[in-house]
Amino acid sequence: MQRLADGARQLGIPLSPSALRAFQIYRDELLAWNQRFNLTAVREAEQVEVRLFLDSLTCLLALREIEKEQKGRAALSPNAPLRAIDVGSGAGFPGVPLRLVWPSLRLTLLEATGKKAHFLEHIVALLGLSGVTVVNGRAEEVGHDPVHREAYDLVLARAVAELPELLEYTLPFARRGGWVLAPKGSAAPAEALASEVALSRLGGRLHRLIPVEVPGLAETRYIVIVEKVAVTPREYPRRPGVPHKHPLR
Image 1 (cartoon, rainbow, N blue to C red):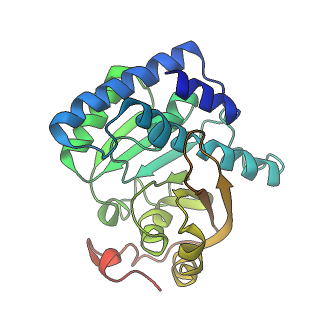
Image 2: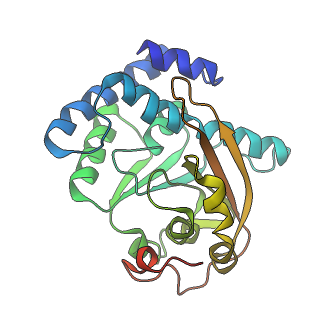
């Protein structure tokens, strides 16, 4: 786990011995399950640490920027007991790595695929993560559930969809004054430009794009930060499949 430890230190997120042990268990379980269930295309231990763990942890850099700009009013530091939802969590990214360094985070992992949701339940139990709930369902449906709609301070989504489509999955979950964070690749600026219609209809405002360097990864990465500034109209998200076929543009 030396690459993870060194990379996290470069990001300004030093990991305790107990956190590193938890990450090692997570990595090994993911690789073992991946042989049977194809949870992720990342199949080498070192690449799990870089492409999945470190890339997820860069969300903390965006949270620091928000808190700094808001002069503490956003209260998004790793000491704050916020409610967060990871939409399309897959094998737990970015939600689980963030929870491992943010013990007070109350986290919901939303995943539509049963086998991935089963893995999430397994890893949450194995790591003893309190305050973490797994929901097996589609964002287009769960986004209308009063228990989850506009109930979260922070909405996370990684490697789910292009931004105009992704905003329809995520913004309905954010409370007014909450935030959506989406780790993205080099296409992030173009996707942001294509999202004006989605943002205006769904109650969001593009706050900024933060370029981030993931230690050990040469690719360009960004964190897209969207602020929830108005209530999302009741008709969104549209029924399953429609946001993908007809994204708001």
